[in-house]
Image (cartoon, rainbow, N blue to C red; front, side):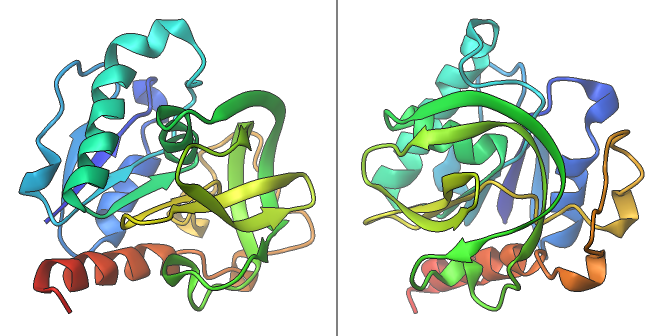
Length: 214
């Protein structure tokens, strides 16, 4: 069972977390935003931290971010697979001492360039959908970049010794929910150009292999 923590702070915008839950083969959906106590990650095969309209550097979010920072550390220590998506990508790197800064709002397809091999990005086309206004500008301790874009050299990352991966894009964002963001603009690409959902399949496989010790 994979724990999906939905970190969207605005209930009306809480449509991407359920998509992560829907696309994973076996998962448990929990609203994480605002919770000062989170489930014990060692009781799960893996954990996914969703996107959010919040910012990790906003002091107003500290009461529920701190317990999740502890969860991240616990996942690393216990070798529980973890996937951070968008805000989750920023959250993981911030928890490990990295830096997140405000940038311009992007709601479109972008082209990423992979940096070496990475299990979570296996089989992915370079065109991926993004919905974000913040960027990781310095990686956390133990993290290394696995993909970059023209505007960000830390677009995706992974931990050097734990089964922990992060992506700035949204693998769960598909044509099914593309009408939800009011500012989405596909630009010169379409959803046919992207197979970003493969990330969730790859993560589910990594969780399964970690559980069985394969």
